[in-house]
Image (tube, rainbow, N blue to C red; front, top):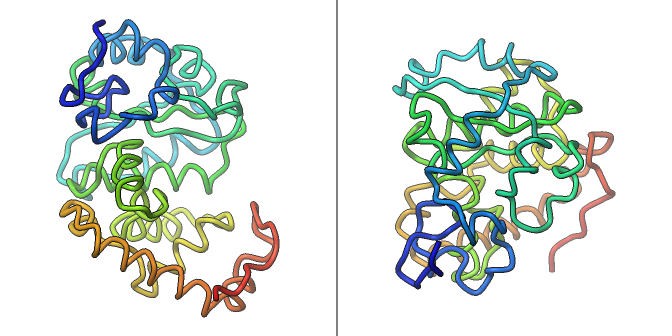
Amino acid sequence: MKKAGRNDLCPCGSGRKFKKCHWGREDELPVEAADSLSAEEMGGKIAALPLVDYGRARAMAGGLDIAELTGKRVGIKYVDLKSYAELGFLGSGHNEAEEGRGGGIFVNPYKTRKSDPDHVYLAISPDIDDSVLIHQLAHVLTHLGDTGSGPGTLDGLALEVGIPVDHLEHPDEFGYWLDYLQKKFEVVPDADDAIILYLYRNGQLIKTSEIGEKNGMVLRAKSERMFRFLGEHSEEIDGIIKGLAGYIGPRKQEE
């Protein structure tokens, strides 16, 4: 594969232009994606992986009428996280995934849309718990609802605007689906998701329509508002998340 130009599609398989995705961060690109395989070839390898059923994965997917919820007749397939990582399609910083632990990843549908257009893929580890499952399923429903960007595609925008990518990857619509799934499957969220739910229920998350407009001033203002809200309610938030998985201590009051 020839070296990607600024206006070519990013080799990561996100579907975004290189200059808006991994331009300047080529070291984060999967070696295979950057050097040899097209998105279609990647999709074929992903679709060929054996299917798995860890934790409540199949029960949760089976309990969702995706067509009714999103209007899309698409199924969910689960593959093993370690096997997926061994394909070489992950960037740097995924040590747990490479060891076959650490939960799950929503595979960018752009990679598999030609090889298997009727399904989206989640790569999950045998130790996946319910909170990680509903988090990844919320990403799936957000994407299928025509309101979400593909997973791993917002780093460039976050860098350009100067805000945490988490604020873009977990928009208001994600909060809606996380809230829905948490209640439907009676899941105790981890500390991070409990904070997302708190922000959602208090109307603090950025909407995907605002993300789609890519107005830096608006996005920075919304992000700063979120930080202020977290600081002003740090004591209440700490009371909610204390004792949950992933809790690392009281949040510091924002100045």
